[in-house]
Amino acid sequence: MSFDPASPRAILTVAEMQAADRAAIAAGTPGSVLMARAGTAVAEAIAARWSPRPTLILCGPGNNGGDGFIAAAALAARGWPVRVALLGDLKALRGDAAGAAATWSGPLEVARADALGDARLIVDALFGAGLARDLAGDARALVEAIDAHDAQIIAVDLPSGLDGDNGAVRGAAARADLTVTFVRKKPAHLFAADLTGDVVVADIGIGDAIVASLRPTLFESAPSLWRGLYPWPSRDAHKYARGHAVIWGGAVMTGAARLAAHAAARMGAGLVTISAPRDVWPIYAMWRADILVEPRDGLDDWKRALDDARRNAVLLGPGGGLDAHLVAAVEAAAQKSLVLDADALSVFAGRPLPQGALLTPHEGEFKRLFAFDAGDRLGSVRRAAAASGCTILLKGPVTIVAAPDGRAIISTRGTPYLATAGTGDVLAGMCLGLIAQHVAPLAAAGIAAWLHGEAARRVGPGLVAEDLAPMLPAVLADLACGQI
Image (cartoon, rainbow, N blue to C red; front, side, top):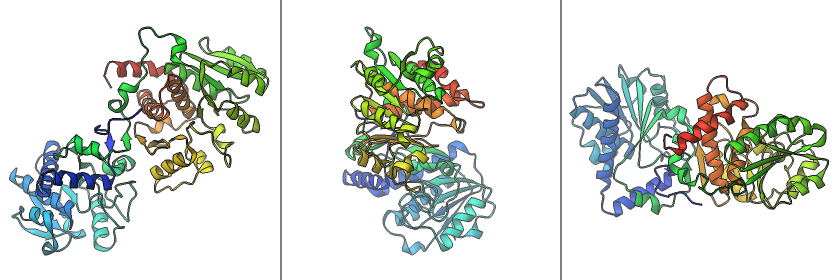
């Protein structure tokens, strides 16, 4: 399973974007032409959203500032009232940025905190994604003044002060209403969406072939990325062809496994079985007619439940109990396609994880298993996946899925309404349902995370976990007919 490296959903790191620039220049497109296209794209995005009004364009000392000069000239040519201010010395500009500055024939002010005046639009073209250090001094004061101003803010590439690769704020950053970036998004556009505002990705003539040559390993989850990987049943499909998912049911928190089972069935698993402790077997058995339930007295019963080779995908953890029995149950299922969630993650703290499994931790569970850097969530998940040999889905406002080979998917489709008990169990069950149908763990997790968020958005306020699985048929119907 692989994603199209030229996909519009590919995400480029700062280094990859710089490499794309170099490749385009080497192929015959001068850097000045790329800059002219970028600045013009900024002006066009602004003119498409706003009518002419007092506009201040703040230019930095590098190529981001060059884009700003081009945008200023383009807006002025449209009759906009434009002021331009430069952070630094005009004579210090070099290369394409110096050439772009020459296109501006109007007055040039000094970019400082007291220069913002009565601007109704402020274009932040100070520093782009390549910022190498924290903002300080006059630059930081200016960015803080932008953030405090009541004008609408347009960022060129990224709001100044954001780290392009992880979205961390380096000293200060101004919250933008619109960000215009180029070729592809960068990780910061996803991790710092509250600061980037709406994001427009402009075409500046760096083609898909160049993007594909970079072999990007990071993608934004969306139907356009994985639609062709969804396991729609064939005309001659039968239930066993669609996989048989098995779930370890707990003795106390019985709702967790039931939420997961319903979700696995809704995602298309041909059969779903819960292995339930005999004492609470009636609770599970009387719940739904379409979910199989088998009584379990001990580990031998669990092993027998796994003997059938058609039972190909197994979920352990939701409501599973924090004891050694769960460790043994995971080890007994190690030859199956595994999804481990909740308690099945916590009991493996300090123990080697079964390689090839899909792990679905929230941040607390992740920290119990792996080293975590809050400033580099993506790097933390990628390192953990490589070290464990597992695919990892780290749940959160921005969900990250990483495979051991370094490929990763980011999903931003979630909603704060998912912050309620049981929604993680539903997500684990959705992953299980796809894996039962032989979808690879990385794709299964990326697809499930996006659909989980889409279902939650449709439910909206008042959402509880039980609402999600019944919403899936409508979401899947729209997916099948190309409506999403």
